[in-house]
View (tube, rainbow, N blue to C red):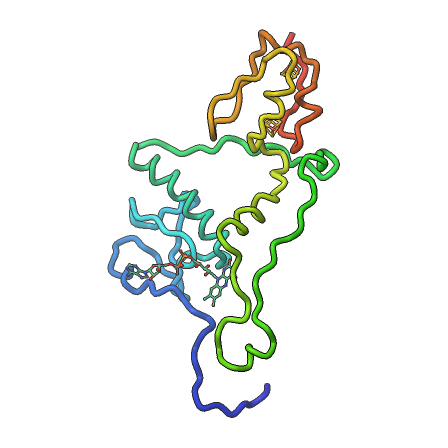
Length: 202
Ligand SMILES: Cc1cc2nc3c(=O)[nH]c(=O)nc-3n(C[C@H](O)[C@H](O)[C@H](O)COP(=O)(O)OP(=O)(O)OC[C@H]3O[C@@H](n4cnc5c(N)ncnc54)[C@H](O)[C@@H]3O)c2cc1C
Ligand code: SF4
Ligand code: SF4
């Protein structure tokens, strides 16, 4: 390895979660690296105590932490109701060929602001700025939502039989099978392949 002369060394990497305060909690199991063991429902060995994110053995990223929070919230809710949280089965993944990319159009990527090279050497001000909330939200909107309805209302507008019933924001749609003729117009136009045509039970 290389040796570097330095006046000050600032520890800025390799942070660990400070879980020492949990040592006194009965049932909580701590690994040698300080992470807390959790079950598949994110519950520690102490009934009613849940954990997630950097303090449990997993990939330490924001995405994983947010996912743990969502999963734990479902299980906490069920635990408080003395019930079991069950997830509805995942939709099959819609591959690239199943998407209708014409729907999404093209848009130039939002650029993060960067300071000019001459000003970078003047001080330690951050060189790369952040996107604004609007820009970040716009970029997140590029998600192709493969196989998952994102409520574009395409099926609602295209059904010739008015068989698609909108259930409200976040609640998606219901298909009225008394009206549906099985013409597949909704299926064919769905940008993200969130609709499957299945044969009617005889
Ligand atoms: C330098 C650095 C760069 C990173 N870059 C990225 C990146 O680019 N992308 C990415 O996905 N991830 C990145 N990560 C990882 C990411 O930041 C973490 O995975 C994520 O923040 C973990 O979220 P968390 O909620 O589990 O923990 P934290 O965000 O650490 O939140 C824990 C909170 O609990 C508080 N707390 C601690 N002890 C107690 C106590 N006893 N009582 C009350 N409150 C307490 C803390 O103050 C803190 O606010 C980076 C991490 C570091 C250190
Ligand atoms: S099922 Fe498809 S077409 Fe209908 S609203 Fe959802 S994404 Fe749009
Ligand atoms: S299959 Fe045809 S009739 Fe049935 S919901 Fe879709 S568009 Fe409407």
